[in-house]
Length: 201
Image (cartoon, rainbow, N blue to C red; front, side):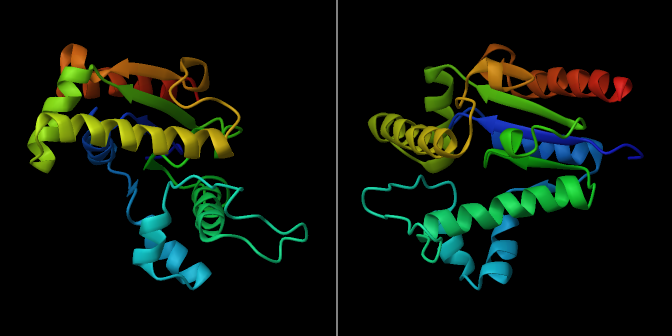
């Protein structure tokens, strides 16, 4: 596309946020950055991609991992996060690339970029539970526990690095409940919003 457009997708676990992000990238014919980020982190930081994946979107606990005052020591969580944030800045600010990115505080990292649209996708518990049970072949209790655990990690990670609160409508351009009208209609609504945003650029 002729204009740069970045779509940042925050999501609750089980809301279908990743699926929607994939469809947004396909619709606008732009890259989707999610797991692809690990290769960048591995190359830049000399970190094994699987290690980077393990520490991705993991909150830092300063009680167990004290950071040195001179910055000579950083725990892996912090190192991986720093490389990921640098990747986001490189693509969005220096390379002026259009892309869709899932999570990783992108709406905060690129908050000064006028070409970014930030979206947060949430969902009703029953709808999310059903999706998680089917996708991961889990029983109801296990699905609910997984949802609670994943969202807690994402929230803690986001709120550690970003000023705005994870899932707070004031931190995003658009918040939408995918359970209300389903994945495809949610996608259509986001596309309409993004198109309107692009028109004013």
